[in-house]
Image (tube, rainbow over all chains, first blue to last red; front, side):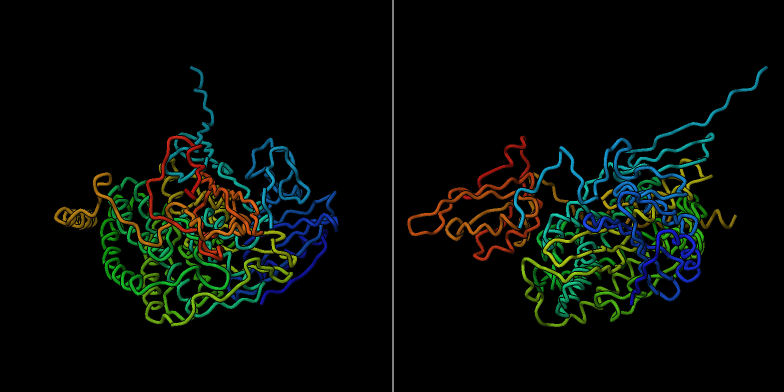
Length: 129
Length: 367
Length: 129
């Protein structure tokens, strides 16, 4: 059904320009944080509206220098998704015209979806299974 | 005489404007009454659901996703249950699948009714609002009978549904459907050819098909632009491949097309519920699933067609009883991306019409 | 001109719908004087059969918001004796998980729906009395 493909961060933009001919639709992109491996993994789901072929594109970024080129020129749909990933994970998208926080207030400190994020106001769940 | 000084006017529409349906703020940069730039500003309803889910076991996830798209909670339930079932290799019994389809389609009708009522209200027609809420009430009653709750259900569970539906429910649903069919004609008589309504919606806020695909638009908005893509047909989930229904599409991609697509979708939903009720198999409604569910390690994403578009939850499991990462692909979030492009060059009064047809659900946008 | 009459016709068509409505019976309930009976499955207020509860704490563990508090002591026969069962209805999501997971069917819903109070503190109540 859906294929998986791993590519290097440096080749992302060039590779995606080629892929755009087949996969014209970007339903979503997101990131996953792996602190023990010291990487942030970006996941792009690409789809073709004509044939429904699906490709899960994965890019691994180093956690301390999470930078990747923005795909907004290839799929305009990436705009807000990239802003959300920047908001929650702190990944910088080079070439994004308007990289601001989208859901959190502009003066927020830290990136909440990182696994090691802590906040003084965070309440720990009292009962966990 | 010196020239009059002109400057750009910045207007903040929302977060409490009634037509923004929740807490959306639009920063409009105006030249007279013409919009030069529109910047959506959201996050007022951000609750951090994705972070919360990393600390909760799988069964506790379902009630939280009810609160994302609270007008179509049943569709959200289904969308969150399917990928986890895929990860854990659970196959629900056929009766449960049929009940899920019935509930989701009823919820789609209810959601579209709220949309239609509020959209007409924004454009100045109060009567459809009252009629739509009158017809939504029996659906809520049906849910109350089967589920116990009227808005947030927590009904669709891993391995089936929470409770079986009774004969009384089936009888009442059939009665509702025969009552509801002529009501759609009433809405159409009130709105579809109404000259005032046409003036407000025809050729307003046009999205072309190519642009819609590039911006990742989904659901009725995409179909109104003429792209024949419905996930119930394109990538069938649950038992949707067993039913026959049409996929209504628009031609121009303006506000009126988005209106008529949703109206026709309600008719199709009625058809699906009728077929599902006729073919409802006997048998169990739930298979036994461990309470502390531990799916296999891996990742899963099942796109579903919610009333607003492609809704899916991307799960990354490490084999523990809590998801490592849960990402919600919220249709309104992606559909709103195009808003800044769509609003350019239109007048302030058109913002209400365009925003109404996008059908934003802020609970889902902000998560 | 044809457009004009078509418009008038369509306006009248809409008015016909509203006129038909006038002769129909109203479907609204005059709430405080007329009351609606909820369906038996209705999730109103969370209650406890005190005699059935064994203080096994399953509902406490599985509550998504941790809004159930149970106090118990171990009796002479080494069985847990329930002391108090408190629910913070301000936190409760009415999801019904506690009712579903209870192995002894001790938790149940009643059909009350007039649950609004003047003070938040009144929402934290002992349910076993």
